[in-house]
Image (cartoon, rainbow, N blue to C red; front, side):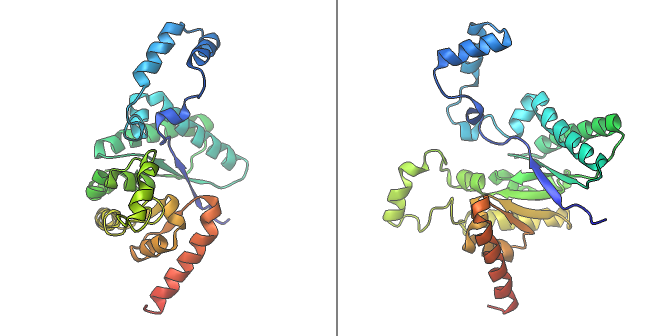
Length: 272
């Protein structure tokens, strides 16, 4: 039978505030108290502790799963239970588990241990074993700089999160960039919106360095990108020249990405 193509599952990455409900705080607190049986004052105190000044650089990604292990374990257990159920029903599956917002090798090794331990527990309970890989998002500049260490620490694939990598390299908050970006574009401070067209000189240099370092430690390292840049033709051309294995983008940009990838391959073949 034909082997199943890998399916990437990213663990929770968005800022914490994106998961919280909008609306009247008193009403939300009252509903939570009713549903959970928790004292309203305790809920308010908890909300205040979780409030962040800069959520984009705050409590998200692997930081959440490290601080609250039950959240990471819940996601991983669900992935493997579903994968085992699919295989038991006659299907074929190959999960790629992706750890987001890694900046240090210790963050990655912590999460790899959790993932492998949880997977083993599911395999034992279901009496089914499946193949899988564990990799990471490269979206923090520090991770790009130490990619050889991250690959050596156990990452079996990289996926460049170019939205966050751009945000952290420029120091532009994606939530606030619209306040000044139009002026920058109008006055020629920037030629393009860096969240739509990859900055090949700066962010691109980090990507090139990361690819080189990562594959120096693990030659078979699978590397791709996920983000809006995956649907931009000039960015796709850059990724092709940098020897990435794939690009991923929002569904409506897939046709553009496929055409751009074909054009980049023909351009290389014709020596242009």
